Image (cartoon, rainbow, N blue to C red):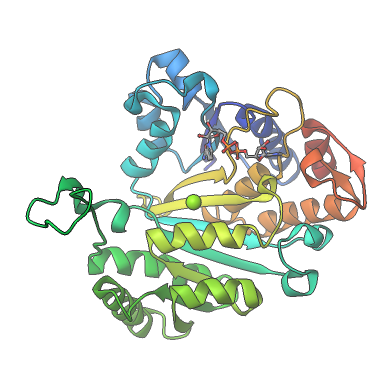
Length: 367
Ligand code: NAI
Ligand code: MG
Protein backbone atom coordinates (compact mmCIF):
# COMPACT_ATOMS: atom_id res chain seq x y z
CA UNK A 1 0.00 0.00 0.00
CA UNK A 2 1.24 3.54 -0.65
CA UNK A 3 2.45 5.62 2.28
CA UNK A 4 0.08 8.49 3.05
CA UNK A 5 1.51 11.92 3.84
CA UNK A 6 -0.09 15.21 4.78
CA UNK A 7 2.13 18.18 3.93
CA UNK A 8 1.55 21.41 5.87
CA UNK A 9 4.12 23.95 4.59
CA UNK A 10 2.91 26.78 6.86
CA UNK A 11 4.44 30.26 6.81
CA UNK A 12 7.60 32.16 5.88
CA UNK A 13 10.35 29.82 4.69
CA UNK A 14 8.10 26.78 5.43
CA UNK A 15 6.81 26.53 1.83
CA UNK A 16 10.32 27.17 0.44
CA UNK A 17 11.99 24.32 2.32
CA UNK A 18 9.00 22.02 1.80
CA UNK A 19 9.29 22.47 -1.99
CA UNK A 20 12.70 20.76 -1.74
CA UNK A 21 11.23 17.88 0.28
CA UNK A 22 8.63 17.43 -2.44
CA UNK A 23 11.46 16.97 -4.96
CA UNK A 24 13.02 14.36 -2.68
CA UNK A 25 9.71 12.49 -2.35
CA UNK A 26 9.36 12.46 -6.14
CA UNK A 27 12.90 11.12 -6.45
CA UNK A 28 12.20 8.20 -4.12
CA UNK A 29 9.02 7.41 -6.04
CA UNK A 30 10.79 7.43 -9.41
CA UNK A 31 14.05 5.78 -8.38
CA UNK A 32 13.34 3.55 -5.40
CA UNK A 33 9.92 2.19 -6.25
CA UNK A 34 8.20 3.81 -3.29
CA UNK A 35 4.64 5.01 -3.54
CA UNK A 36 3.29 7.99 -1.60
CA UNK A 37 -0.16 9.55 -1.57
CA UNK A 38 0.48 13.17 -0.70
CA UNK A 39 -2.14 15.71 0.31
CA UNK A 40 -1.50 19.37 1.08
CA UNK A 41 -3.16 21.79 3.46
CA UNK A 42 -2.50 24.92 5.50
CA UNK A 43 -1.41 25.48 9.08
CA UNK A 44 -0.52 28.58 11.12
CA UNK A 45 -0.88 32.01 9.55
CA UNK A 46 -1.61 30.50 6.15
CA UNK A 47 -4.55 28.59 7.67
CA UNK A 48 -5.74 31.72 9.47
CA UNK A 49 -5.79 33.57 6.13
CA UNK A 50 -7.74 30.77 4.45
CA UNK A 51 -9.99 29.33 7.21
CA UNK A 52 -10.00 32.03 9.91
CA UNK A 53 -8.15 29.79 12.38
CA UNK A 54 -4.65 28.35 12.65
CA UNK A 55 -5.79 24.75 12.04
CA UNK A 56 -9.11 23.87 10.42
CA UNK A 57 -11.11 20.93 11.79
CA UNK A 58 -10.92 19.17 8.39
CA UNK A 59 -7.13 19.52 8.45
CA UNK A 60 -7.03 18.07 11.97
CA UNK A 61 -9.18 15.13 10.83
CA UNK A 62 -6.86 14.49 7.87
CA UNK A 63 -3.82 14.58 10.16
CA UNK A 64 -5.38 11.81 12.29
CA UNK A 65 -5.75 9.54 9.27
CA UNK A 66 -2.41 9.76 7.47
CA UNK A 67 0.75 7.77 8.21
CA UNK A 68 2.78 10.93 8.73
CA UNK A 69 2.38 14.70 8.80
CA UNK A 70 5.23 16.88 7.47
CA UNK A 71 5.19 20.45 8.73
CA UNK A 72 7.33 23.41 7.59
CA UNK A 73 7.09 26.25 10.09
CA UNK A 74 4.46 28.63 11.43
CA UNK A 75 4.36 32.28 12.46
CA UNK A 76 5.36 35.71 11.28
CA UNK A 77 5.07 39.42 12.10
CA UNK A 78 1.78 39.66 10.19
CA UNK A 79 0.13 37.46 12.85
CA UNK A 80 1.79 38.79 16.02
CA UNK A 81 -1.23 40.86 17.11
CA UNK A 82 -3.85 38.11 16.79
CA UNK A 83 -5.74 36.82 19.84
CA UNK A 84 -3.93 34.07 21.74
CA UNK A 85 -6.32 31.37 20.46
CA UNK A 86 -5.78 32.40 16.83
CA UNK A 87 -1.99 32.63 16.90
CA UNK A 88 -0.15 30.44 14.36
CA UNK A 89 1.56 28.29 17.01
CA UNK A 90 -1.85 27.23 18.34
CA UNK A 91 -2.22 25.24 15.12
CA UNK A 92 0.94 23.30 15.86
CA UNK A 93 0.00 22.81 19.52
CA UNK A 94 -3.42 21.49 18.52
CA UNK A 95 -1.81 18.91 16.22
CA UNK A 96 0.56 17.71 18.97
CA UNK A 97 -2.21 17.58 21.57
CA UNK A 98 -4.98 15.90 19.58
CA UNK A 99 -2.59 13.38 17.99
CA UNK A 100 -1.23 12.76 21.53
CA UNK A 101 2.39 12.97 20.36
CA UNK A 102 4.10 12.14 23.64
CA UNK A 103 7.63 11.39 22.39
CA UNK A 104 9.62 14.23 20.86
CA UNK A 105 12.76 13.05 19.05
CA UNK A 106 15.59 15.54 18.68
CA UNK A 107 18.70 14.08 17.04
CA UNK A 108 22.00 15.91 17.42
CA UNK A 109 24.28 14.74 14.70
CA UNK A 110 27.51 16.44 13.73
CA UNK A 111 28.41 16.32 10.06
CA UNK A 112 32.17 16.33 9.69
CA UNK A 113 32.15 19.14 7.12
CA UNK A 114 30.35 21.38 9.62
CA UNK A 115 32.21 20.45 12.81
CA UNK A 116 33.75 23.92 12.99
CA UNK A 117 30.24 25.42 13.31
CA UNK A 118 29.79 23.68 16.64
CA UNK A 119 29.95 25.69 19.85
CA UNK A 120 32.48 23.09 20.99
CA UNK A 121 35.88 22.00 19.70
CA UNK A 122 35.97 19.75 16.66
CA UNK A 123 37.59 16.85 18.55
CA UNK A 124 34.71 16.82 21.09
CA UNK A 125 31.91 16.71 18.49
CA UNK A 126 33.34 15.01 15.37
CA UNK A 127 31.16 12.03 14.54
CA UNK A 128 28.59 12.90 17.21
CA UNK A 129 25.25 11.09 16.74
CA UNK A 130 22.89 11.20 19.71
CA UNK A 131 19.12 11.26 20.06
CA UNK A 132 17.22 13.06 22.80
CA UNK A 133 13.73 11.72 23.51
CA UNK A 134 11.71 14.35 25.36
CA UNK A 135 8.33 13.62 26.95
CA UNK A 136 6.07 16.17 25.25
CA UNK A 137 2.51 16.01 26.59
CA UNK A 138 2.78 16.05 30.39
CA UNK A 139 4.95 17.30 33.24
CA UNK A 140 5.27 20.79 34.66
CA UNK A 141 4.04 22.58 31.50
CA UNK A 142 0.63 20.94 31.93
CA UNK A 143 0.31 19.85 35.59
CA UNK A 144 -2.44 21.18 37.89
CA UNK A 145 -2.71 23.20 40.05
CA UNK A 146 -1.17 26.10 38.22
CA UNK A 147 -1.61 29.86 38.26
CA UNK A 148 -0.59 33.13 39.85
CA UNK A 149 -2.41 33.84 43.14
CA UNK A 150 -2.47 36.30 46.00
CA UNK A 151 -0.34 34.93 48.83
CA UNK A 152 -2.79 36.15 51.48
CA UNK A 153 -1.55 34.60 54.70
CA UNK A 154 2.09 35.38 54.19
CA UNK A 155 2.94 38.90 55.39
CA UNK A 156 6.66 38.25 54.81
CA UNK A 157 6.16 37.90 51.05
CA UNK A 158 7.16 41.19 49.48
CA UNK A 159 4.80 41.76 46.53
CA UNK A 160 2.19 39.40 47.99
CA UNK A 161 1.82 36.91 45.09
CA UNK A 162 2.76 33.32 44.37
CA UNK A 163 3.26 31.58 41.01
CA UNK A 164 2.52 27.86 40.86
CA UNK A 165 3.20 25.04 38.40
CA UNK A 166 3.03 21.36 39.17
CA UNK A 167 5.39 18.67 37.97
CA UNK A 168 3.13 15.64 37.72
CA UNK A 169 3.80 12.35 35.97
CA UNK A 170 1.82 9.12 36.06
CA UNK A 171 3.62 5.81 35.83
CA UNK A 172 1.83 5.15 32.53
CA UNK A 173 3.10 8.40 31.01
CA UNK A 174 6.65 7.52 32.00
CA UNK A 175 6.44 3.91 30.80
CA UNK A 176 5.20 4.79 27.32
CA UNK A 177 7.94 7.31 26.60
CA UNK A 178 10.53 4.94 28.10
CA UNK A 179 9.32 2.24 25.67
CA UNK A 180 9.82 4.66 22.76
CA UNK A 181 13.38 5.33 23.92
CA UNK A 182 14.24 1.62 24.27
CA UNK A 183 12.72 0.81 20.85
CA UNK A 184 14.79 3.60 19.27
CA UNK A 185 17.96 2.48 21.05
CA UNK A 186 17.55 -1.04 19.64
CA UNK A 187 17.86 0.44 16.11
CA UNK A 188 20.90 2.53 17.08
CA UNK A 189 23.63 2.06 19.70
CA UNK A 190 21.49 -0.04 22.11
CA UNK A 191 22.08 2.38 25.00
CA UNK A 192 19.65 4.58 26.95
CA UNK A 193 20.54 7.20 29.55
CA UNK A 194 17.55 8.45 31.55
CA UNK A 195 17.80 11.90 33.11
CA UNK A 196 15.81 13.35 36.03
CA UNK A 197 16.44 14.83 39.47
CA UNK A 198 15.57 11.86 41.70
CA UNK A 199 17.76 13.42 44.38
CA UNK A 200 15.31 16.30 44.96
CA UNK A 201 12.00 15.46 43.21
CA UNK A 202 9.41 12.74 43.91
CA UNK A 203 8.41 12.80 40.25
CA UNK A 204 12.09 12.12 39.55
CA UNK A 205 12.09 9.08 41.85
CA UNK A 206 9.00 7.72 40.08
CA UNK A 207 10.61 8.47 36.69
CA UNK A 208 13.73 6.52 37.60
CA UNK A 209 11.76 3.55 39.01
CA UNK A 210 9.41 3.29 36.04
CA UNK A 211 12.14 3.56 33.40
CA UNK A 212 14.04 0.85 35.29
CA UNK A 213 10.84 -1.26 35.41
CA UNK A 214 10.34 -1.03 31.63
CA UNK A 215 13.99 -1.94 31.16
CA UNK A 216 13.96 -4.95 33.50
CA UNK A 217 10.64 -6.35 32.25
CA UNK A 218 10.71 -5.54 28.54
CA UNK A 219 14.17 -4.44 27.35
CA UNK A 220 16.80 -6.14 29.52
CA UNK A 221 19.10 -6.41 26.47
CA UNK A 222 19.39 -2.61 26.13
CA UNK A 223 22.02 -0.93 28.31
CA UNK A 224 20.36 1.52 30.75
CA UNK A 225 21.96 4.17 32.92
CA UNK A 226 20.50 7.00 35.03
CA UNK A 227 21.91 10.48 35.47
CA UNK A 228 20.81 13.61 37.32
CA UNK A 229 19.77 16.13 34.69
CA UNK A 230 22.14 18.85 35.88
CA UNK A 231 25.06 16.45 35.55
CA UNK A 232 23.57 15.49 32.17
CA UNK A 233 23.87 19.11 31.03
CA UNK A 234 27.53 19.10 32.04
CA UNK A 235 28.23 15.76 30.37
CA UNK A 236 26.55 16.89 27.12
CA UNK A 237 29.05 19.71 26.86
CA UNK A 238 32.04 17.82 28.28
CA UNK A 239 31.79 14.55 26.33
CA UNK A 240 28.58 14.26 24.31
CA UNK A 241 29.71 11.15 22.44
CA UNK A 242 29.27 9.04 25.60
CA UNK A 243 25.50 9.05 24.88
CA UNK A 244 23.31 7.20 22.40
CA UNK A 245 19.66 7.78 23.37
CA UNK A 246 18.77 10.16 26.21
CA UNK A 247 15.22 9.99 27.61
CA UNK A 248 13.95 12.77 29.84
CA UNK A 249 10.88 14.73 30.89
CA UNK A 250 9.26 17.70 29.20
CA UNK A 251 11.07 20.51 31.05
CA UNK A 252 14.56 18.97 31.19
CA UNK A 253 14.11 17.79 27.61
CA UNK A 254 13.28 21.29 26.42
CA UNK A 255 16.49 22.67 27.88
CA UNK A 256 18.80 19.73 27.14
CA UNK A 257 17.69 19.40 23.52
CA UNK A 258 18.35 23.06 22.81
CA UNK A 259 21.80 22.74 24.39
CA UNK A 260 22.49 19.60 22.35
CA UNK A 261 21.38 21.41 19.18
CA UNK A 262 24.23 23.87 19.51
CA UNK A 263 26.73 21.01 19.55
CA UNK A 264 25.97 20.55 15.87
CA UNK A 265 25.98 24.03 14.37
CA UNK A 266 23.26 25.73 12.35
CA UNK A 267 19.54 25.86 13.13
CA UNK A 268 19.02 25.17 9.43
CA UNK A 269 20.33 21.61 9.93
CA UNK A 270 18.14 20.29 12.76
CA UNK A 271 15.27 17.86 12.16
CA UNK A 272 12.71 16.55 14.66
CA UNK A 273 9.94 14.01 14.99
CA UNK A 274 7.04 13.72 17.41
CA UNK A 275 5.55 10.27 17.82
CA UNK A 276 2.41 8.94 19.48
CA UNK A 277 0.77 5.57 20.01
CA UNK A 278 0.67 2.97 17.22
CA UNK A 279 -2.30 3.20 14.85
CA UNK A 280 -4.29 0.25 13.49
CA UNK A 281 -1.64 -0.34 10.80
CA UNK A 282 1.10 -0.55 13.46
CA UNK A 283 2.70 2.76 12.51
CA UNK A 284 2.93 5.43 15.21
CA UNK A 285 1.01 8.68 14.91
CA UNK A 286 3.73 10.99 13.67
CA UNK A 287 4.59 14.60 12.92
CA UNK A 288 7.93 15.57 11.35
CA UNK A 289 9.21 19.14 11.31
CA UNK A 290 12.45 21.13 11.28
CA UNK A 291 13.40 22.68 14.62
CA UNK A 292 13.70 26.17 13.12
CA UNK A 293 10.85 28.66 12.72
CA UNK A 294 9.50 30.59 9.75
CA UNK A 295 12.57 32.91 9.55
CA UNK A 296 10.72 36.04 8.35
CA UNK A 297 14.07 37.84 8.00
CA UNK A 298 15.04 35.67 5.01
CA UNK A 299 11.64 34.48 3.74
CA UNK A 300 10.96 34.82 0.02
CA UNK A 301 14.63 35.31 -0.87
CA UNK A 302 15.71 31.77 -1.73
CA UNK A 303 18.21 31.83 1.15
CA UNK A 304 16.69 29.23 3.50
CA UNK A 305 18.58 26.03 4.16
CA UNK A 306 16.23 23.13 3.30
CA UNK A 307 18.38 20.45 5.02
CA UNK A 308 16.53 20.47 8.39
CA UNK A 309 13.28 19.78 6.56
CA UNK A 310 14.86 17.17 4.27
CA UNK A 311 16.39 15.38 7.27
CA UNK A 312 12.97 15.47 8.94
CA UNK A 313 11.65 13.55 5.94
CA UNK A 314 14.56 11.09 6.38
CA UNK A 315 13.25 10.53 9.91
CA UNK A 316 9.80 9.84 8.44
CA UNK A 317 11.32 7.25 6.13
CA UNK A 318 12.99 5.58 9.11
CA UNK A 319 10.34 5.81 11.84
CA UNK A 320 7.02 5.82 9.97
CA UNK A 321 7.79 3.74 6.89
CA UNK A 322 10.52 1.41 8.16
CA UNK A 323 12.72 2.48 5.23
CA UNK A 324 15.94 2.77 7.21
CA UNK A 325 18.14 2.13 4.15
CA UNK A 326 16.44 4.89 2.19
CA UNK A 327 16.80 7.24 5.18
CA UNK A 328 20.52 6.46 5.39
CA UNK A 329 20.89 6.99 1.64
CA UNK A 330 19.30 10.44 1.95
CA UNK A 331 21.48 11.33 4.94
CA UNK A 332 24.59 10.24 3.02
CA UNK A 333 23.57 12.49 0.13
CA UNK A 334 23.34 15.44 2.53
CA UNK A 335 26.71 14.56 4.02
CA UNK A 336 28.30 14.32 0.55
CA UNK A 337 26.95 17.68 -0.59
CA UNK A 338 28.30 19.30 2.59
CA UNK A 339 31.66 17.59 2.12
CA UNK A 340 31.72 19.02 -1.44
CA UNK A 341 31.54 22.51 0.09
CA UNK A 342 28.02 23.34 -1.12
CA UNK A 343 26.62 25.98 1.25
CA UNK A 344 23.46 27.96 1.82
CA UNK A 345 24.23 31.33 3.41
CA UNK A 346 23.73 30.10 6.99
CA UNK A 347 26.46 27.46 6.48
CA UNK A 348 29.02 29.77 4.96
CA UNK A 349 32.01 29.88 7.29
CA UNK A 350 35.43 31.50 7.03
CA UNK A 351 36.72 28.66 4.85
CA UNK A 352 34.19 29.58 2.15
CA UNK A 353 32.42 27.18 -0.18
CA UNK A 354 30.07 27.15 -3.12
CA UNK A 355 27.13 29.47 -2.31
CA UNK A 356 23.76 28.07 -3.37
CA UNK A 357 20.08 28.94 -3.11
CA UNK A 358 17.42 26.86 -1.35
CA UNK A 359 16.40 25.23 -4.58
CA UNK A 360 20.01 24.57 -5.74
CA UNK A 361 20.70 22.84 -2.41
CA UNK A 362 17.72 20.54 -3.00
CA UNK A 363 18.91 19.79 -6.53
CA UNK A 364 22.48 19.03 -5.37
CA UNK A 365 21.23 16.61 -2.73
CA UNK A 366 19.10 14.81 -5.30
CA UNK A 367 22.01 14.69 -7.76
P1 NAI B 1 13.61 31.20 13.46
O1 NAI B 1 14.04 29.81 13.68
O2 NAI B 1 12.53 31.41 12.48
O3 NAI B 1 14.88 32.07 13.01
C1 NAI B 1 16.01 32.30 13.85
C2 NAI B 1 17.22 32.70 12.97
O4 NAI B 1 17.71 31.55 12.27
C3 NAI B 1 16.86 33.73 11.89
O5 NAI B 1 17.94 34.60 11.71
C4 NAI B 1 16.66 32.88 10.66
O6 NAI B 1 16.94 33.57 9.45
C5 NAI B 1 17.63 31.73 10.87
N1 NAI B 1 17.12 30.49 10.27
C6 NAI B 1 16.11 29.71 10.75
N2 NAI B 1 15.89 28.69 9.92
C7 NAI B 1 16.77 28.79 8.92
C8 NAI B 1 17.03 28.02 7.74
N3 NAI B 1 16.32 26.90 7.44
N4 NAI B 1 18.00 28.43 6.90
C9 NAI B 1 18.72 29.53 7.18
N5 NAI B 1 18.53 30.29 8.26
C10 NAI B 1 17.55 29.93 9.12
O7 NAI B 1 13.19 31.79 14.89
P2 NAI B 1 12.59 33.24 15.27
O8 NAI B 1 13.23 34.29 14.39
O9 NAI B 1 12.72 33.35 16.72
O10 NAI B 1 11.04 33.17 14.94
C11 NAI B 1 10.46 33.58 13.69
C12 NAI B 1 9.02 33.11 13.64
O11 NAI B 1 8.97 31.69 13.64
C13 NAI B 1 8.19 33.56 14.83
O12 NAI B 1 6.91 33.88 14.37
C14 NAI B 1 8.16 32.33 15.71
O13 NAI B 1 7.02 32.30 16.52
C15 NAI B 1 8.14 31.24 14.69
N6 NAI B 1 8.67 29.94 15.17
C16 NAI B 1 8.03 28.82 14.73
C17 NAI B 1 8.49 27.57 15.05
C18 NAI B 1 7.78 26.40 14.46
O14 NAI B 1 7.06 26.54 13.49
N7 NAI B 1 8.00 25.21 14.98
C19 NAI B 1 9.66 27.38 15.93
C20 NAI B 1 10.31 28.62 16.29
C21 NAI B 1 9.81 29.85 15.92
MG1 MG C 1 13.05 24.95 23.70
